Length: 130
Image (cartoon, rainbow, N blue to C red; front, side, top):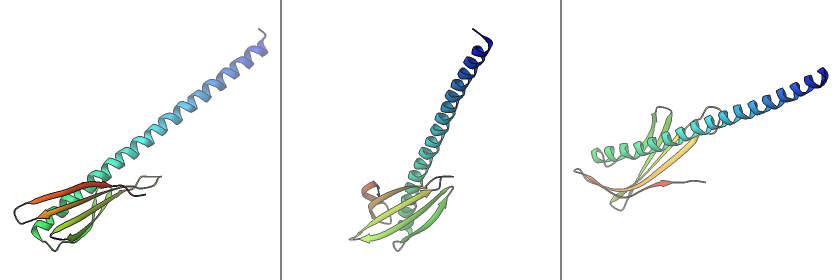
């Protein structure tokens, strides 16, 4: 093989190796983004559940409680409480901002019977919004 041919082959192989390296870096970066998004989803779900727990606790002390907004770490939680035929409908929606991306939201809806001594849950479900 001549010197010129060897140089061309070496440059071609170098270009192939660089292209494969770039693909590897992009794959790792994409996996990192997916991991951050999943972490935010779990944080939002836990914060929404915490909002429901807070509402249940406050309703036992004050049946007139109707909700509010709270900040928990990176999450902002909006809690709404509506009396409904002797029970309460509690909706807790948490939003977690992602740096450089859209915020992640999760919502929980609960129907509960509450007395001074205890509470009973009729339903507890995650609400998915379009």
